[in-house]
Length: 397
Ligand code: PMP
Image (cartoon, rainbow, N blue to C red; front, side, top):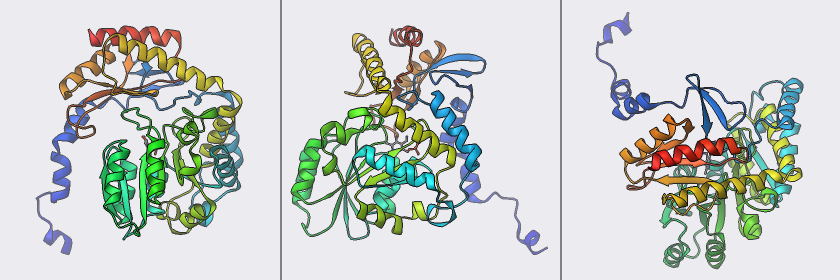
């Protein structure tokens, strides 16, 4: 009765905002990304009955349909059930989490590791687990959203430095109080640009100013380094990076994430980090698939070499057509079109020719950098390339 008395016919302002938001309406109009009906091979998907080549998956090594990965996931599901139903530090921790953590730490050349149910959580934790109010975070201006979320939640002060610009980083550090604790946040491979982080220059500056370095290598592991050990290994700088954060949803062909580092740091993070304490642990099949993929990376190096062969083949085509790839040096390849309209028409032409890519426009990218984001997989075949080449030539023509 009382509720009825106060109830009015007007919508509350938050529901009204949701209903009227023009950006949401635009996204819904063009939203094709929930339509994938089948996608077994990793490079072919079916949308509205039409088979398309997937040229936008982060599954760089193409292991999600590898028989050993499937078998491991199925066995784990049967043995351990579907979920963990609790946090690592409460009832959700299992033996297999420890196994995976030890294997990842060993692979990455770090003492210790902790796994999370999502890469996004792990990357947030790679900041919130260490930086706190009163510290200063020096952040590359092109960081992934998960890192910005972590930076904001940490309550530390923030200084942005130019993308991959160690000189700018150094000039900022020279002006700061040398006694304030500082964390530098960078990525191994920047996902939108495909740039490799300038680790040699940045770790040098970090050492000069006694900074803690936290690196998100979600796109670097599996892709760079000996057997895919990532960007730090690629440069021989593993010891200069305090924390390596990663995702299990890319080369590991699963979902989840982790952070690896020194024993003291990881134990501290386990004690203090809310992303771990208050979120359910990685599920059995996710963990088992990632463990299987990790083994494959070490036992079947052909996946990594196929990935790079395919990347070179694709880059050659784009170069021949004079397309701007923003200096990408990795299998994450943006095609920069410059305006939202041009990006949309390029993306649409690829779509018409049966090639699935993702369009990214401002504010997701800097103004003038509107692009179509592509990603190469070790699984792309000659037949896939025939389709890709024809579509790219058509879109660029
Ligand atoms: N960091 C980077 C650089 C990423 O690109 C992503 C995913 N796109 C994440 C973190 C989050 O990983 P996940 O999707 O596994 O949650």
